[in-house]
Amino acid sequence: MFVKYLKDCREFTAGDDSTLRELLHPDKMDAKIRYSLAHAKITVGRKTRPHRLQTSEVYYILSGQGLMHIDNKSFEVGPQCAVYIPPNAVQFIENTGSSELEFLCIVDPAWRQADEEILDG
Image (cartoon, rainbow, N blue to C red; front, side, top):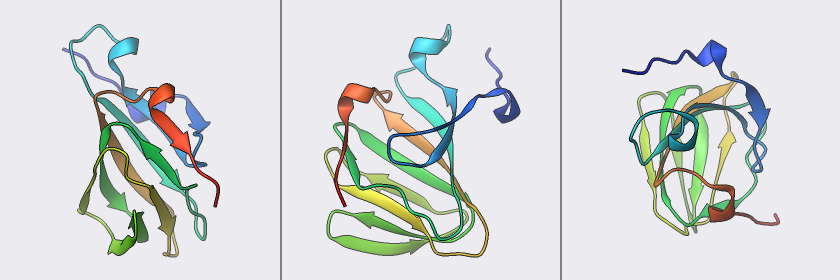
């Protein structure tokens, strides 16, 4: 069994400008998982940089309101909303609400820097 609390995870700014805390990653724990799990925050009025992953990703919105952009489509997201992002899709999310936008990011297979491309714009 493995238990990790968000408060015990180091906070850092990711390449897409989101604030992340990595909860689970197979390279950093003694467990046989193939995915990674992170907690992300976007402050009011901010958005992540457009980027794409070679792997699939799921966002699960915990709190706040946002606008999710995947390739040429955009849609509103809020609490209890899950978003599937297919491999190689250009993606970014913006906080359109009046409080922090918080969500979980599940990447499968696990996130690797070499699998991510940050785009201009």
